[in-house]
Length: 236
Image 1 (cartoon, rainbow, N blue to C red):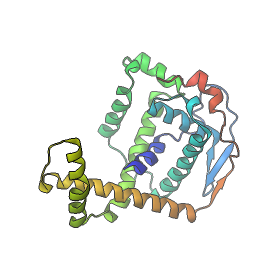
Image 2 (cartoon, rainbow, N blue to C red):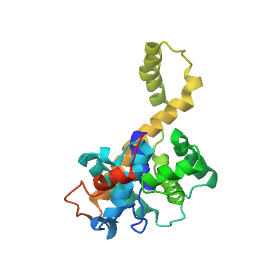
Image 3 (cartoon, rainbow, N blue to C red):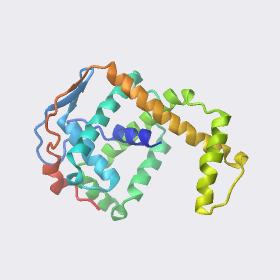
Image 4 (cartoon, rainbow, N blue to C red):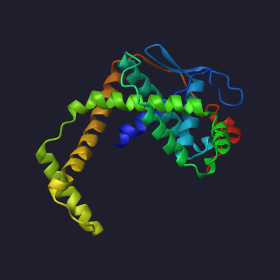
């Protein structure tokens, strides 16, 4: 479900302009979605926290990658506008804690609380900020799932075709153990559902873009992130 994963990642990266990165940034409007602004600071935070999540430095992001982050910010705004009620599909505390644990566990250098806080600071973040954005990420994931899953039903013949035409040949190529269709039916069905949801999500986002007032105001995608990366975004 690569499209959904890539999309929802940005849901926990959008930060308020008041939560500034270390160092002075001159804020400006870089885009707007139905008159909802996206500021330079939102964009810089998104790049910085995506870099944190991926174990990269901010400076390693190319102009094309930075623009892709801005595109995802716009898409995330479009979907959040569809929610209407901010309390819809809210994440449970146990799920938030589990996701935070996974993120922290991916950084061996953040084992102690002190080291973890130091690492977050390098990316212009803190624990509370990260927690809020993880909660938003999970909320968007749940909302998208509620919105698209009913339309992603998979026919039995599609499961059978994937099993015989894709799964079994892959297993044989790897020299793995073959299982019957009955044994793997739920897993295959979910794979096909996720693929279908990726297509539905792409189509839905494109439809929202086609029918929304989106203004692009960022001519220069290099922005200030590269300027602050040496001070803020030491990577692994």
